[in-house]
Length: 289
Image: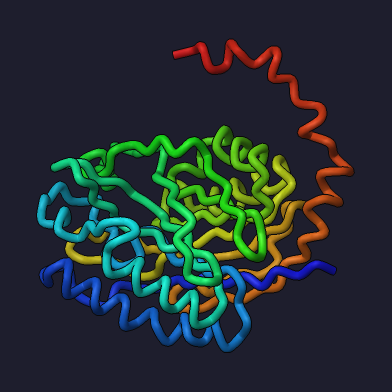
């Protein structure tokens, strides 16, 4: 068996939202470091955090205060620190973060990918941005156009899809066609309307694309917005759509799991979805507006 040891970290907010974004960042980084160190001790090869892991999910507001939470990628302090920890533990780290650019007023919901030797490999910017009550993301994020990058890490061909992206099958397929064997989906999703989809969409996408998926959610309730409970339950799902390991609903947790990467080729050879695709007849799907 070709084993890939994955790690997912889910966490509640460690400072109240009346603090500065800088103070909250420091609090969240401090809380993550012991779990990152534990991941290193357990031999995790690919580690991923939750969406915008250094901050609250601030999108229920439309408060420009949170622009101060954005960092440069890869030159900001959080990514630089994760490069050091990746090098220390020979561990690939996916760093979901609020990204500022050199253009005033342009920010992205981003995940930086760091290889096991600390090398910055690149980034994925969230493609699909919701704009509904409680999720005013277009106030904070410009839609990304990352061309579905797949990162050849030391251990696996890795793709990233972020939160709301998971509702759109096109990106999963594009990442798989570009070679992704394991795709992580850092999220911030609350109980209510879409919770039942949490254990439905990623397994279905894993089956459709013959890959492993690591789904990460935060935990707890974040005042003052109180849009609902972030219900955790981060998990690993295999290419057959079976959830192999799942985290708790309501506590900080490092979830570690060994994935059988031989299953990726086995399932793709069995079902042959890529062979049987018909892109020659799909033009009307993208022509519709």
